[in-house]
Image 1 (cartoon, rainbow, N blue to C red):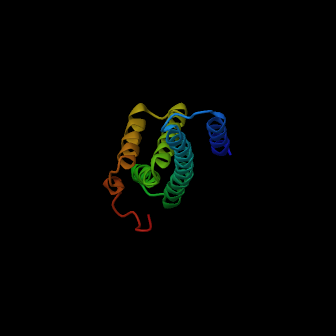
Image 2: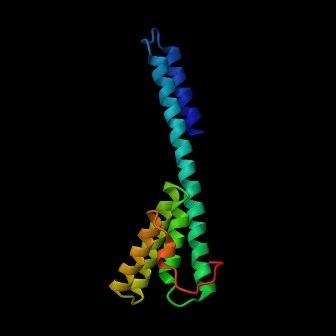
Image 3: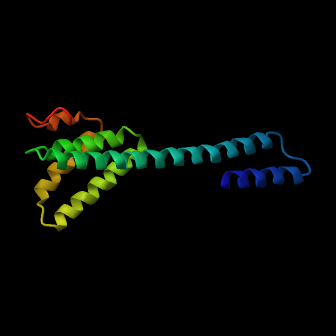
Length: 143
């Protein structure tokens, strides 16, 4: 809707102009395309953020279901890696969720050292590292 309004205003401005400058129409078309591209980029970002949030929730649920000793860092890394694979929106969602989770853990009495280890695993996965670096021995293959 906003893009249509912008294009309509630009078209009206050119229409009422007595003598448009050479290249003005091309500039207006380029501006309209830019507005449209930003809209598509925003939609892609939002979609990636939603899907990345789902990836983070899945990793958390899998961690709870597995209930496997020393698997926390693996699931942190895997959730972040899966979310980041969704693009900038997914990577953003993974970072916000991870940071919020670590803040919550600290407020509940978690140590700075534990938080730093979790954040290292989060960043590793989010930045393209293989989550299996943190996979504990014997963790069932379904995870």
